[in-house]
Amino acid sequence: MTVSLRDSITNGEAPARPQAPALKRRWLDFGQQLDWRRRLLLGLTGWLLFVFGWYLAAHAGLASERLFPGPVAVMNALVDLFMEQGFLGDVVSSIRRILISFSLAVAIALPLGLLMGAFARIDGLLNPLLGAFRYLPAPAFIPLLLMWLGTGDSQKIALLLIGVVFFLAIMLADVTRQVPASFIETAKTLGGGRRVVLWTVVFRHSLPGYMDTCRQMLAVSWTYLVIAEIVAATDGIGAMMMRAKRFVHVDDIMAGIVTIGLLGLAFDALFRLVYRWRFPYLRGAHQR
Amino acid sequence: MHTASGLIIEGAGKTFRAGGRDPRVALEGVSLQLPPGQVGVLLGPSGCGKSTLLRMVAGLEEPTAGALSLNGRPVTGPGRDRGMVFQSYTSFPWLTVRQNVAYGLKITGDHSSLREGAVEHFIQAVRLQDVADAYPHELSGGMRQRVAIARTLANHPELLLMDEPFGALDPETRWQMQELLLGIVRKERTTVLLVSHDIEEALYLGDVVFFLSSHPGRLREVIRPDFKKDVPAGDREALLDHPEYRRLDMHIRRLMSEEGSTQGQPA
Ligand SMILES: Nc1ncnc2c1ncn2[C@@H]1O[C@H](COP(=O)(O)OP(=O)(O)OP(=O)(O)O)[C@@H](O)[C@H]1O
Ligand SMILES: [Mg+2]
Image 1 (cartoon, rainbow over the protein chains, first blue to last red):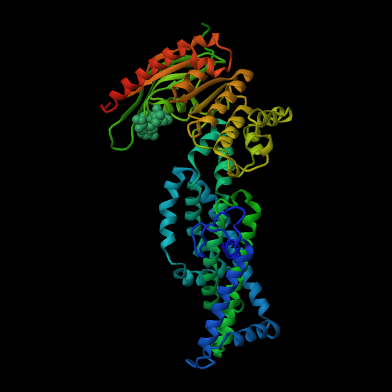
Image 2 (cartoon, helix red, strand yellow):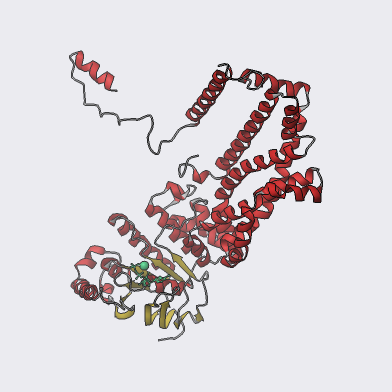
C-alpha cells in the first residue's frame, strides 16, 4: 500500500484520496491468529530444521555412523523394520496397550474427578488419598506387578494405569472446579436438580477441559509404555528397541523413537480434530 | 389485603460467619410484601445487602433469621417458580441461543410448553430471532442478557428475580432493555423483584421501590411511584417531566447521600 502511494507521488499525480496507512504488522505479536495453512507451514519448518540439524550433526564426524546414524539411515531402518521384520505387529501391540490402559484410566478417573470437583465432601475424602498415590513413582510398582501379574500384558496395562490414573483424577477434578458458580446457580433457579446440574452444567462445561487433560496425560502414558516394554516384553515398540540394543542396531532404536513421536503426533492431531468438531463454540474463544 | 399471595418476606436477616473472622451482619429484620403482577425494585447503597436478599428469595442463600414465602409456599431452596437473571452473563456458552432459551423447559420436562412454541415466542419477545442459532460468544453483552431473560421467562416463573441485569450495558441499550422488560412483564403478568442502584431505572420500572439502608441492611423506606398511573404507559419523557417524579428523585437522592455519609462507620 505504501508502495502505490509513493508511486503516485513520484508520477506527479496527487492521490485521489489519502489512503489510510496500514496498521504496522509485526511477524511476532500478541494474540495472533493463524490459519491452518500457516500453522502447517510453520510446523513443517520446525521439523525440517530439526532433521537438517540432525543430518549435520550425524555427518560432522563426531561419532561413528554406527552409533549415531543420520536421518536417512534411520528412515531406511524404519522402512526395513516395517517391510522385513514385522514391526507393524509391535506397533499394534503397543497401541493396543495404550488404548486399553488409557480407557481404563479414564473410566476410573473421570467419575472420581467429576464427583471430587463437584462435591467438596467427596473431594475431602479422596483428594488426600489420591494426592499421596500420585507421588509414588509408577516404576516402583514394577517388581510387585511382575510378581502378581507375571510378564504378560496385564502387568504392562496395570503399570500404565497406575502411572496415569491418579494424576488424571486430580487434574480432572481441577478442571471440574472451574465451572462458574453462577452457571450452577442459574441451572438451579431454572428448576434443575442435583443430577441435572451435574450433567448438563458441571460435566458439560468441563468437557473441553477433560479432553485437553486427557490429551496431555496420553503423552505420559507413552512414557510408561516404553518403560513397561523395556522391562519385560516380547513384542511392542519398546521390546523391539531392546532387541536392537543387543545387536547395537542404533538405527533401529532411533527408528523406534521416531515411531513413538509420530504416533504421539497422530493421537494429538486426532484429539484436536475431535475438539474442533465437538466444541464449535470455543472457536475464536481460545484458538489452539 | 389477601394474605399468602405474592412474595412475603418476614423479618429476614443474614449474618455471614466465615472461619475465625467476626460475623458480618448483612441484613437485619427485613419485612416486605410484593403482590402478584407487580414490579418491586430493591434500591440502596452498595453493600447494603440487595444481592443477598435477592439470593435468599431465590433459595440460593439461607436466611439466618425470619422466613420467606411465595404464594403461600415457604422458600426452602431454589426452584423453577423463582427464575433469576444474574448480573454476570450466564447464558451457557456451549448452547446456541435457541438451546439456551429451551434449557429450562428441557430439564424440567415441560414438553407442553416446548410444543406450544414457548421458545420461539420468547426469542421473538426479546428480538433475538436473527441470531437464534448463534452461540453466546458471538453476541454483544446486551444480547447475551436478553438470552438470559428469555430463558428465564420461557420457564414461566411466578417470580422473576433480577440482580442489576442491565448494570453492564451502555445507557442506550439499557433504556431499550428496560422498555423491553416492561413490555414483556405487562403482557405476561409476571411478578418481578429487581435490584438496581439507578434511581431512574427504579422509578421507571418499579410499582414499588424498597429502599435499603446499610450497616446493617434494613428496609428504610417503601416508595410507591403511584403518579405513574397518570402518565401514558412507557412514555419516559412524560414520566421524567412529572413533578412527582422529580420530587421522588430528589427524595431518594437525599436518602442515598445520607447513607453515603454513614458509610465509613463500622456495623
Ligand atoms: N459470602 C459472603 N461472605 C461474607 N460476607 C458476605 C458474603 N456475601 C455478601 N457479604 C457481605 O454482605 C453485605 C451485603 O452484600 P451484597 O452483595 O448483598 O450487597 P449489595 O447491596 O448487593 O451491594 P452491590 O450494590 O455492591 O452489589 C456486604 O457487606 C458483603 O461484604
Ligand atoms: Mg449486589
